[in-house]
Image (cartoon, rainbow, N blue to C red):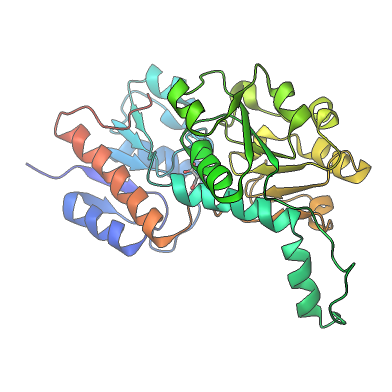
Length: 324
Ligand code: DGY
């Protein structure tokens, strides 16, 4: 029996590409270019499986196209799948999978990294040393905000959020509160001595740090808007490792300019890779190029997980990470 034809839309770590070559008749993206809409359409027409990622946006009804498509499964390299219109996939009977769990800790590490970097002014301090303008220690230099023991509020309390809570609560003695329309078990809540709140607003009012862990797109688009920034403490920081569109970027810029919040640590942006000039010019923000899952270990594991979903599908099994 011939092997399924599989396309990886971007370059993957060598170990994961090698596994793909072992399992399938695979086409790699050797020069790692971002595929055009036409290339993605052709991929859906001509491959049994397509493995896209967050930069292939949006894979929608137009791309799923006509009935003569060959593609039966879109196996996303990534846990977030707002780059794929799952309703459109369902409509044409294409299975969609993602890669949960394997990136949980690394993404949580980046959330903690942003939280500490922005509140302790690490980016600013590093820039000062590099500029050779540092003129030595003094008791009032670069005073920042203490992290240990502060209140950390979560919007969304799923896997990645709980990994952040583990580091923050047990490592930094932080008090945990959260809002999630699908809250975890009482056992999980008890483990963190967490406070379950009834609304996003309740989290915002009381937290010293607010960290976003909800899916992007749909009703979460611009969830953090001007009204909600106004509810945050003016000493509080916003951390976003979820999706850029969860934050109304102009409203965030205004909140930072007005001093309505103290700062922000952002790994994701509404229109990646474009970042607003206002944010680029501010010292009280830390800006990362979507690094949440960017460790060798995790990116290999994501590739292998995506391939495992394709393999299961073509063996006639239910892929472990089916989302549509
Ligand atoms: C994901 O998996 O959703 C990340 O944002 C990409 O690493």
